[in-house]
Each structure stands twice: as structure tokens, then as C-alpha cells.
Image (cartoon, rainbow, N blue to C red):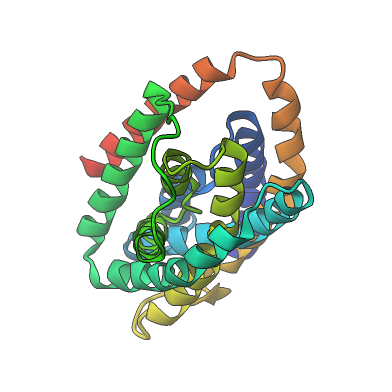
Length: 265
């Protein structure tokens, strides 16, 4: 079996898992996609030196598709305050590109530790199930721009849409949960698109990349993930109605912590 077929089949399974857990736990797929691809790609003959940046880039590229679908649904339901989203998207885009550039300038060890540390902190946040109460008025345009820039950089460095970062901040700034998720979903498309674009152009010419690569984006993996993730998300939503999701989310958070620790050590 060719490498293309092997990766494609493995990533259709990965996409199924990502979609299911996204629907079940309401999490972004990048937290699953990146660690799995980091371990999967070297097993399929891809150099471990490029596995992490390829995992980050491929994760961001897949988010373009999943977030686009979610944005249409949120817009239809009136969950997106566009006047706020428009203030964030420009600097989120800049942050997405900067995150990719920063990732390209870091050593593999530094990038791995940075990713693992960020995952560990997000997992702790998820485990504690911290509830954000509305507290302060929406900040001015300059502050919103800064929030967008930093969120874009972090999300691009982690290969995620950034909802785990933006949603708590926006809820703290007086948005409802639905509005915060709606704005974060729009920003997720932007950071994913410009972050993925950045990972295309930062791939060094001398890097040993596999066939079917677009910069650091690995197309067989992207195709497999996108095809099945959207199909399995509704299944996760249905199962969530029957299971104690809060306990499952804490269990998943512990799993992420163990993955992060293994990546660091």
C-alpha cells in the first residue's frame, strides 16, 4: 500500500475520532489532531524532524473546513455579533501568520515543549471546568486588537482554532456563551487560514518533505480528516445527550495532561 493510501486511511479514522469528540465534548479538533499526527507520521516513514510542524499545519488546514461549517450554523442562529468579530479578525490573521513564522524559527525541541506546555495548561483549565462570569465591559478597539493578535499567535503555534483562548476572554467581557463561541468560530477560520498559509511558506526548501505536501501541510492527512470529521460530529452531539459529559471532559483533560507530559519528557 502506498504512503498516500496508508496516511489517508489512518486519517479517516482520526477524523472520525476528532469529529466524534468535538461533538461530544465541544472541543477543538487540533488538541487531538496534533498529538496523534506527531506519533503517526514517523510510523509511516515521515521524518520526525518535520512531523510536528506538519501536524500543526495540517491541523490548521482542517480547521478551515470545520470552522466554516460551524460559522454558517452560528450565523444562521444569530449567534455572531459581527461588529465585534470584525474588530478581531484583522489582528487574528496577523497573529496566525506570526505564529507560523515563530514556529519556523524554533528548534524542534523548543516547539515541542511550547506546544506541550500550552496543551497542559488548557487541559488543567478544562479539568477544573472553570466557569467565567460576565464581569467587565467590552474593551476598546485597541485592547480587542491586542487580544486578537495574541490569540492568533498562540492558536497558530498550537495548531488549534483558538476557541479555548478566546471564549473565556469574551465571556469575561460581557458576551454570552453563544456569542463568544460564535465570534471565536469566525476567528478560527481566519487564524486557521492565515496560519496554514504561513506554514506553507515557511517550509525550508532543503527540508525533506514527503510527496503530496503543500509546504508543511500533508494533503493525504488533511483529506482523510476533513472527509470523516464532519460526518461524525453529529453522532458525538447525540451521544452527549445521554452521557455525563462533565466527567468525560475531565477524563479527556487528564489524558491530554499525560500526552503533554510525555511530549515534554
